[in-house]
Image (cartoon, rainbow, N blue to C red):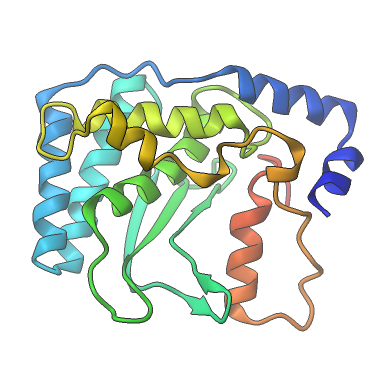
Length: 220
């Protein structure tokens, strides 16, 4: 299915995918301010404090965006992850086409046990959505594809923000936690979303998260 989706892409979008794949990192300098924001996220999650987690996540996103010179996205942290029999939704990026600040939503508690997620997992989710924001705001990509380059940019951001903190990992640990979606082949891409009719709320959220790879900045 995903390969069929890839074959149906217009030539211009295939070129956009290739450009996304060619950008392997985000030019962001490590700083004590980034590390402080990361530790604030860690403390808030350890306290299971939703409001504090949202403030810390927003601070981190603000500092990342300031570091690369783009407007920040607005962060919302919610509690238990939306879920169905297939799994849990971790995060969602919603572009607003310039009407207001683009939005990032992340969930901080697991669906089954309702425990706060681990800090590294939460940060990976947050940075994944930040990378969608940077595709539009920094790299001027018309689409935000889940290319191999996209996941490399996510990993590069993670390494920078945790540098100098206890959350920094060695090379072996980083390799072990590499996202499973790093395969750059078309088979790793999500299929086109199904029609909106007769779908549950969680299905719609999942479709939105998957379709971001093919959603145009000025689209509906």
